[in-house]
Image 1 (tube, rainbow, N blue to C red):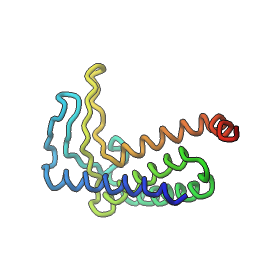
Image 2: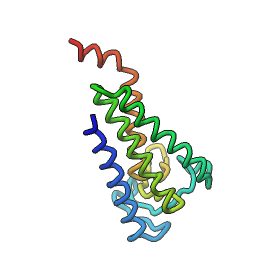
Image 3: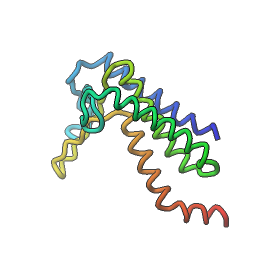
Image 4: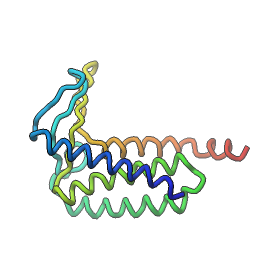
Length: 158
């Protein structure tokens, strides 16, 4: 059951190394195009939540993050046994939550750097990081698991 914690640890390490690299090698606001105009790196900082909401609310984020981390670990051990998709989704959530919490704790802000543009609909996606991506993927997997939990459990019984 503890083997899935490696996913969270991997996310945290990848997230922190990528953020460290951005901070050390790029100036704030600097941009590097990788697949012009669809994808690139843009050194950005965020003191708020998703899409910059609730700027500067450190203590609120700290409290919510600690509650979320405790909740994830609790549900992982209480409900996760024998449910690999559920476990993976929770560990992606845990890694993402801790990754961004480390930034808030030590930098006072979250380092964002992944810049995606969707030209077909002329949409400049909010800049994000590895932790944000992990949180998003974790939520999507959790929703899929919850929607199809009964079917997944019935397949396992057969």
